[in-house]
Image (cartoon, rainbow, N blue to C red; front, side, top):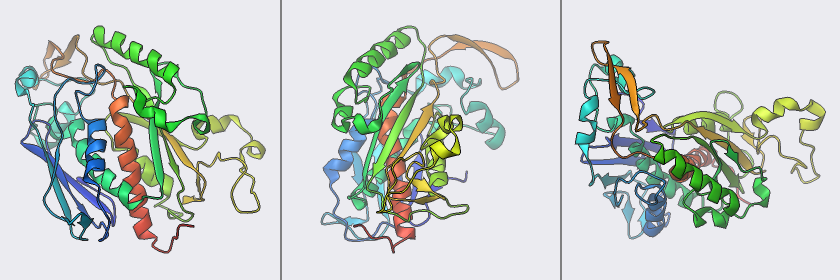
Length: 355
């Protein structure tokens, strides 16, 4: 299986399956001498871990990170940073009923067709549990990018949408509720809706919005390695993501060019920011902001019809512990992938200086 590595210079390779002994990764290319706050890394893991509230999967995993290399006396050494997160609460028998059949909209069928064999326990390598390793690496990237502020939050659940510009939000409120929406009134409605959907044995999707501030001018390349293209790849590599838009996104098609153009101020900043902080594939110093759309979780706790390995129709029912809505736990994953992209481009463009 290829495709387990992300990045060019600041490079992460992950390993492990949902119901294996452990998951983990190797982060290569991290510069030496960076002070590492292990408590901050664990805090990021706690934001992503299962069982943290009534509206997420109730699998209980401490998600404690163990580092094996690359950090000495609280600082990075410049050598590969190896780490692991042990799985402690597997219930593999919850998946025995799908050993010979395929869950709709999951990776089960294509894995079997491509590899001729699959780990059916929780989806194996295709499980979103793999993203825990990304959060570890992203937390280290954040500490490397200490002057860049990355804030993600839930802006929509189902049809419940928070129509408030991010400039008017207090990001400090994002962690004040289990939905991770920085607008308390909207968050309360979202939480109740997720609970209702869960009682029905169903799931619902949503949108995570991310804002990166104090990004220096000059990150990104103008042809195939555009900054927004790499951010799009990073976000679309996250489980359950179905869409990515930055800046004005799809709403920009409603505007004329004369309305959409970001007019310059004398200092090079712009009066508006429909470009989303990126022009010609290169960061321009303005805030980078984008939306990431997550589909409803494919596993529903309801009877459904599918096919088995022989192509026969069978009826089964979702079992196990699953999120009724992934977006609350996806917030730190989106931040982590953003940090990995920006860290990689900072190393690719070492001439960039913070002012």
